[in-house]
Image (cartoon, rainbow, N blue to C red; front, side):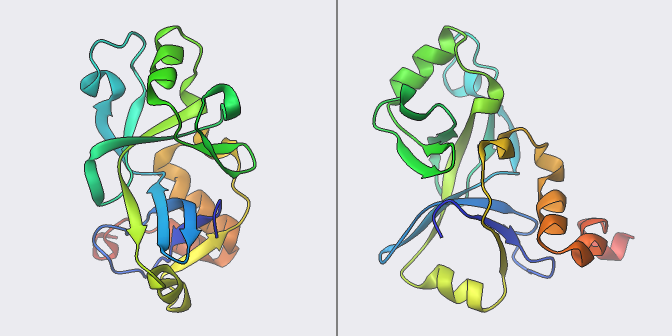
Length: 179
């Protein structure tokens, strides 16, 4: 499950995770950890680290857990020490000060890193249960290209990639009663 993308089922009725696309970075016997890729906040890195030059990187809402902490996924590989390989060319975390240094010196582009306030977490067997219940669809082909996609269109794009017939749901507004 690590390195896979979870796409909220079109009929998922969960106030927080509706229309979410989540990168699962860790799935073990203890539980699972991931980050919502498509919930961009109004905040930028410069808002939480004003001293950083070039801090115009958006911050995404990673999930409902530890929303006061900043996490990051990136495609910089071993250019950041202590990083964890997730899938293909996607990496989780690493030395935050090194990342800030690279950003400050203009060596990181916005499509190479994504910052998150908080994370999505599941307890022991919780994610497996939600998958069995049909709450999530799975895309196994996670690459760094996910950072290039527009956050607003990501759920729709992933949904129709998984199953073309779901396109009808992707084109309905967030509140179907408003259509």
